[in-house]
Length: 326
Image (cartoon, rainbow, N blue to C red; front, side, top):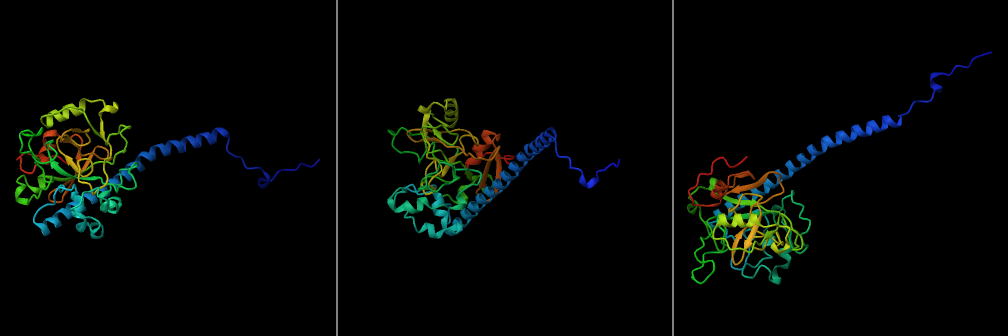
């Protein structure tokens, strides 16, 4: 009897068993889990770099404005037109400036198109800005009013509730026209620009970008910090302003101005009538980008000493602010 032998080519190839397939899937899942944080970190590093470039462009624009006008631009004018608006020609956006009449209020119908026109230099890629209305073009970069809490200039009438509260000690405030010689702390030691995220535009929702209302009346920055930190932000009775970060046209403490009264990424609060503590805040892990008055750019940690941070916010306080940046 003859025996028929199977040739190697006639054998069926052996496939993966279910166990082997599950092991391979588990290995792939583990590798993805290990790689994903690295990929996300690389993406955020790229976004942070782009954000820093935007701050650098704005700092350079401030220098060019100064060369042309012999002062830094105002923090806002009487019509609440923002610093950003006056910098448009210096970031190659003269066409948009033509849509603005600084003698009209920011929310005048004349400004409808300008308010909705996006300016890439004003946007940080790290901020999703998911709730921004289509009629408002966003802004992630703020200009420094100083280390105090008064919104506006000091009142002269003793009957005013804010009489006696120190005025802005930074570079950008109502009708400001600060010159280099006014910055006696030095342009390398005085903040000009930092960040803040776009809000949720919903007072029925509590978000870290919101400006809260402790319903108290602090006498100074220390009291403002204490009273702001003491509230339960989940309690919606403390909601005050959620229309944060837009439009860039609007010169306001929740859209274009920030304060050095509390450290970066701390809570923002307002204390009507006219006492404000809007902080620098970002979506970057661990800190914020900051542009100095000499157009240099630093990344400042959330752990920066409060006294140092306040010193960076003043233009002529004489503080020592060494070692504040990463």
